[in-house]
Image 1 (cartoon, rainbow, N blue to C red):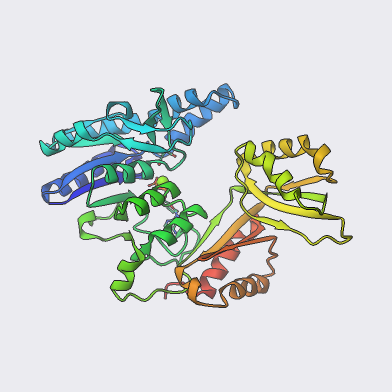
Image 2: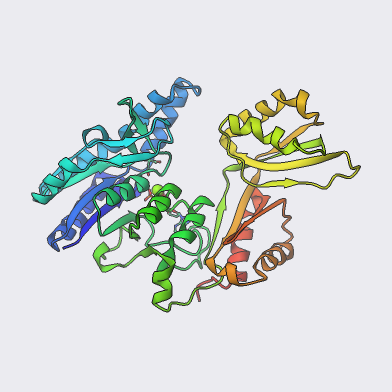
Amino acid sequence: MARIVLKFGGTSVGDTDRIKNVARKVKAEVARGNEVAVVVSAMSGATNQLIKWVNEITPLHDPREYDVVVATGEQVTIGLLAMALQQEGVNSRSWVSWQLPIKTDSAHSKARVIEIDTTEMDKTMSAGEVPIVPGFQGVSPEGRITTLGRGGSDTSAVALAAALKADRCDIYTDVDGVYTTDPRIVEKAQKIDRVTYEEMLEMASLGSKVLQTRSVELAMNHHVRVQVLSSFDEALGSDLPGTLVVDEEEIMAQGLEKSVVSGIAFARDEAKITVTQVSDRPGVAAAIFGPLAEANINVDMIVQNVSLDGSSTDITFTVPKADLARAVQRLEQAKAELHFSEIKSDINVSKVSVIGVGMRSHAGVALKMFETLAAKGINIQVISTSEIKISVLVAAEYTELAVRALHTAYELDAA
Ligand code: ADP
Ligand code: ASP
Ligand code: MG
């Protein structure tokens, strides 16, 4: 008997027929003798609608009240799924976050899970009851409802799997696994059978929203075996039809050959800022990025241009689009100290990345990327690299062309 956490995303619980379909899947896993706990998202579109309402009241809202509102989508689906399971003759009940509790920090709208107390739930599972838990939702040390950031139900599921010491966490979604790139953009994308935690972490953080980044981090740290699979296929998670996220050693041990590049990701949620003619002296970078860090704004890619006259230089970097206005405001406030000429910003940019652990031992991966983009006439605005990825910033209108060309260049296209 295995203990499995099953997570169903928004599309998988998008209407009541789909919730009934989920109930049949859960029932089938139970019928195989497995001990099952379920995490669900809100119905697709529900969270967007809730956020829209919040912003219609005021865009400058109290984040604690924002969480009270946006966490409700998941409360609807846990109740509906528990009922659907009861209809199927499966003993089931729902739990909201404070009933377990799922303890998080107080960072409202982007809270981190600290601990999940499964004592009570464990007892009911041993007695054969299937618990249904809301994704995305937690409770702060102050006893207030928190949410874990968009896509956070993946993280709830992995955190619950870690707390329950589950054998596996199955993430049911609307695609049948992790692909070499978003299959909705590149028709020839290929399903990957096994991907390492490290590669999945890079893919997620660089824009592949199939798993929330934090969920991969948690899975890696707690050695949770994660499988991504489709809720619309007949196959059950226990037959391992999807993509498994595993340790690199496991892939090596099986003698599976790793390609140098395993995936291409893209993200359209960053904006580019250029601060022109700042003085070229020690301490300037700290003076620019200090105020941004204080404002809790994440700076991602950075390039400092060569100074032409030896006295001043331009610095270009990216920040989340959502933080652009605040970032510009903070820099303007620091103008007296920074002595720059102007701040230029551009939201029509997109970050395209190639990812692969094989890059560690292979030269020429970056060159191929630059040559491929050049051949398509795509200008590279900023570059950043790590051991297992290369990212470039390009004009947003070239995103799909760049992703497709790179997918072909690294021989990832399906035959
Ligand atoms: P859910 O609502 O189930 O959480 P999401 O929309 O969050 O589903 O994530 C699934 C989507 O992720 C897919 O529909 C797909 O378009 C997108 N996606 C992006 N990159 C990838 C990738 N490399 N492999 C698979 N899916 C991807
Ligand atoms: N419902 C939340 C969202 O749409 C969480 C999730 O679906 O993972 O972001
Ligand atoms: Mg998701």
